[in-house]
Image 1 (cartoon, rainbow, N blue to C red):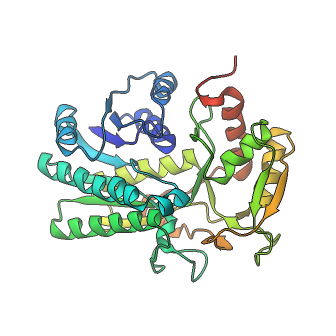
Image 2 (cartoon, rainbow, N blue to C red):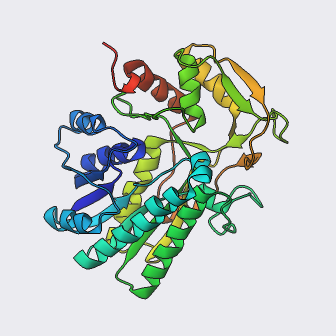
Length: 343
């Protein structure tokens, strides 16, 4: 059984490749390398001892997708490919709709034409919008508040419509909270290009001296220390959730042919708690300064994970210290990401 991993050279996609190979699956990666590095594929091979077939292509190229699905005898898809920065999406909405929504439409069309009818989709907690209650359950109303989140929600609705049209389709929609961490080996990890969009890479760049300080956006929220609280999940736990979702769909034991579950820990950590945890892991001071709140940020956001535990028999088990320790190990071994590595 060969699994096609779109965006498989990226942060989460590369970790997913390791998980699937170690579980005995054959994989093929498709990536246009617009926001990733093929060095990650070499690292996957080093970790697993297995060759990683890779097709450099764009998911908007339907004919190429069909060629790849047939050539590699694919039976399922794990779909990561797409643009993913909330702030950028507000400035480039058309690019986000084209890459994420149109790209997924082309992928589904290619799957339909080649008889491949199983997909795990990389969605996001941004589909919930402003939390009306916490922790967030899967039946919380959906109302994305930015173009990135809306593309994820549109794709979820597309998958639901396709599943309703034909019971042979099988979709697992995984709503991520905040992936952090790196592979235990330190060989693959988050490698942001340019200015990071997420908290953890910013913290690491202060720790290793690339940035002078961290800007903490808002210290007047109604939280335990005034800073925003989020649910962070170790990337290794996250991809193990993908593996379980794939197995549940393939076995026919899913609750329906299109289901959505949260992938988080159920615990919320504030910005300052993340800073303190990373200081412990790195033995470095993380300098920071408070800045005004950002538009669209909420005070708290964390998951209810009971449905994932029930449906997938999965639960995140790596704690915050492990998230920070593994991130720092990756940074120390790869001080400039995939561009260079430490001797």
